[in-house]
Length: 300
Image (cartoon, rainbow, N blue to C red; front, side, top):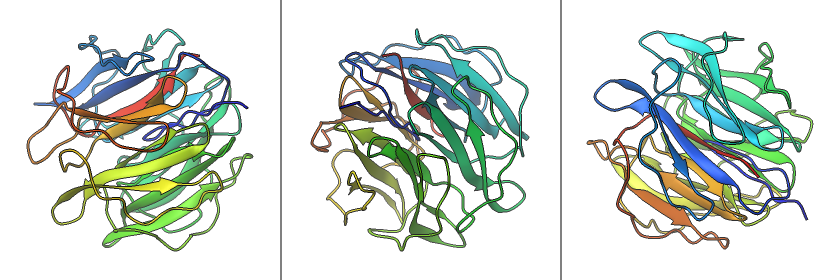
């Protein structure tokens, strides 16, 4: 059975034994383009010097069979630029943006080799999406489906589908929108679990996903698992430090990791997720503490 990888959103899609992950960009004392690689055993590396425009509140997803892409965000002004990541984890310089510049969006992989950016904030909340081909080409805007919102998360699930979930409308939400294996976004599914925003998501196991952490009042660390048919579960009690504006991705053959974010103060701690969706206690962080970053898996 193929293994699928997700993030903040990455979704997974190709048989693999050594998938790695990468955290990138975000806000430290200023916007950053630093990256931190994650090995196929979940070991986070020290900072790699940034490439491309420093920014925060962006999204990332894997595409093709072994590559990733960071896109959009805020560099002072909203941008639509993207930065590809090779199957060796090398981040490329900026690619001219396509589609409406936006921030606080989410992204995930769908099908076996494509990705989708969606939702976020333009001059108001948005539900626009932009598909990414299996060669990393970003498409123009697709009219939004479902409730416009920002500060949501996304992940792949099943063998070839994706899900956007939670986020901020006029208040925090727990709505979800599934994405078919052809990249078609569905109308709203009634939310399950605690409403929240500024959370993360990743896939784990061979076909499931998990939403975790985020902001209610105050920050939380609860999680909500997603089955291989896209059914979101009720809350699982949180593990680790409550925080928001973090990121998540899968690594190895079937594990995932949440990392970084803010408690009110930026942090660099991580929490691993087992292949049964069990979240571990905090691991002391590596690299520069920051929030509003993104993460994706890459490699194979």
